[in-house]
Image 1 (cartoon, helix red, strand yellow):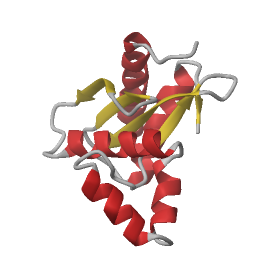
Image 2 (image 1 turned 45 degrees about the vertical axis):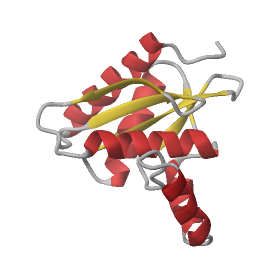
Image 3 (image 1 turned 90 degrees about the horizontal axis):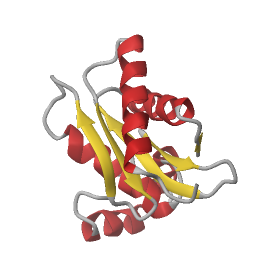
Length: 141
């Protein structure tokens, strides 16, 4: 499959949130974007705090836009901060280079989109994204 469907995006979210509940993480928001960084699906759990959707969306869009995980973006940002500040200011709300988003790839490595989460630590956010992607048979990156 060469595109991420709304159905698969919703399944990723369901699996990601199921993992979050199993692990006892705080209420989460998960956003799934396509390869162009456009929203496919999202869900805000009851009790998730303000701005969580914006953060999850910004992480996912940044990962899709730069074709790498937001963890990698976090690391790159320290080396070229001016470039990242420019990106953040030119894409208001859609570029948050903080750990918590990963790419969605098919089995041949084609990038289909990205999943971003917010509500826990960056590591927790990233873990639920990976769990959701793996559960539906895609590959994370």
